[in-house]
Image (cartoon, rainbow over all chains, first blue to last red; front, side, top):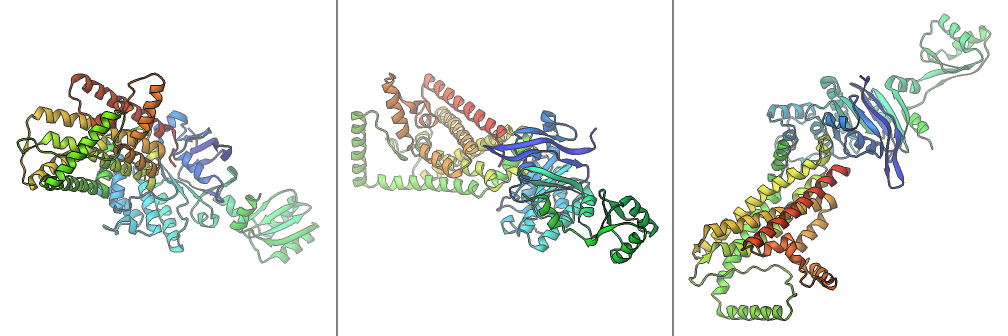
Length: 301
Length: 285
């Protein structure tokens, strides 16, 4: 059995002559919050539609629980979606919208709906029609709708798009609660890496229909955190000097570069010790790359 | 499948148009009957009506291919002054009154899911999306039954309010007529459902529905007839092979009844197949 709950294999979607998704291989671990990031038109929504079963791939496949093709169709009901805007009946209440979806799954328990509404913070909306809901409330109801039937995978397309800061925090808290309390794997897209960085455990960065980077939150943190970048002729010897200085949080990046992630105020002292050990230091400086600049660099044309 | 029907039905009865259309049709039926009553008491209008009908008859004799465009509802009492229920029902059902409103409701109901994006909340989780076509069709069967009940009841109320008497000479004839009309109306709703699924534009499908129920499409049929006549089919009459054409006629003999059922089933099969296949194959966007 695969360690991944969801994978795509050379997944493609072509509209006319235009490839919206040009062969991507996404790997999502069970229980992860997988953030799919990309600029507008990068192919995120099309990818999520194919994962969610709303669109058929032109070629390639989506593997769910290790099953592909017709076999994946049998477990398709374990994947729930909130794509683009949450389709709601404006003249119906939150409860009624939920009930309509619950009926599809044969769920008749009123408490089930109440609990889900409570989970997304809509437990007290009463008989208010959804057309009177704020955008944030609509998105949260969309998430609650997607939660009906206890899916194993939740696919959310830009749920924070257009929300005010308060709305963004609400959605973020909701997703964290869902992941923590229900253990659901979440695939969420956004064009704002900064926002996803607060919830996601894994990332996939899309650009022009391709997956240009796939990494864990730790790897991203490593790429973007503050560090002392040392360029020297002998990184192997430099690491011995650093350990003698009590520095353990460092990483040899390549043949001449070492990144030190601690004691950021001791640049001068580290430089002196390296020189004293006979090493030639051609560059030593405190650097950091913001999530935004990292994203822009990765998706540079 | 049963759960899907329950969900579709739950949403259908909560549409505002569900009640509004039934209320409009009830009001129109009652108002038409009361207006007919008032006009029947007006001798000058009766003379005018007689003249118009004779002119129409003469025109049709001169040009058998001529077709009326628009809706025509004529309610008349028998010689004994009583209203035969089946004849009154014919005026409203074969006169396309119910058909027009059924079509409008079908477009609203079927396109609602697509327009508000609700279908994306569950469409991907269905193994066979063809079932959506079936569940919506079954809901529309129920709606058609309610529409027929409202039509018959409002007809009775209208006649009663006009101070007139209803009679049912033959329950069998009434049942027979309503059964055939029910089948044809249901098939019409399913054809419009398939059109909604394929076209996914409520303006186009609403226009199509109005063109069929207001006889405007007869203009196209006549053009088609002319083309077929040129090809050698001398008695070409496309209307005879359409659901709406059969609604306007009353299948009295066995042969006509049989052909009506065959036409209804053919349209039903094609609509279900086309709509179901389209839903299954096409992306939900």
